[in-house]
Length: 58
Image 1 (cartoon, rainbow, N blue to C red):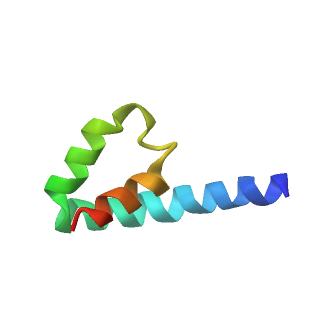
Image 2: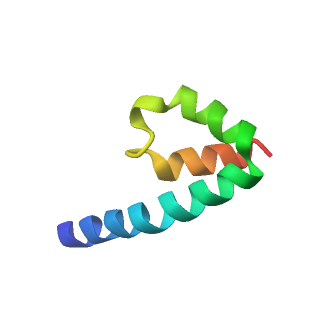
């Protein structure tokens, strides 16, 4: 179980951070930077919830 969480974390890190931030910079500039300022300290730790939060703003 613990290893699963770690593997999932690295998968999320590699896929979501690169892919989502790439899409974000082009399509959701304002929303991303707004959410980024709010969650700046925990940006990478909460990348999943951050992406979901920013998506809900649309």
